[in-house]
Image (cartoon, rainbow, N blue to C red):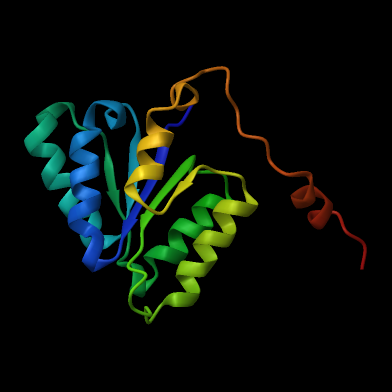
Length: 151
């Protein structure tokens, strides 16, 4: 069951992510949302209008370029994030591009659902597995192997 969702969007895609959150507010209301700076503020304001007091907790981390992407990456590695929605602006190079690529790598490594666009995010959130209590992500064996390697 997905309970902790990280939401990130570059400036050119923030409105798109906020629209997605409003559209899916009912599916998100039982989750905790971890967001980078401005994105979190915008999502919190939007959910106040849509759900009022019934809105989910929105935890605002640092702005992405100031370390928010790295904070979310650490949360993924610690098993504190079940899903990542990151609407990237792929038309420009970001000053914190290394942090962006790190999130992609960590989401893949730790086998969490990861959407970079609205279509994928819609498919994930509408999947029967999204709310299934019987579904549990499988941590790839390579992680334990790496932790226990002999040098």
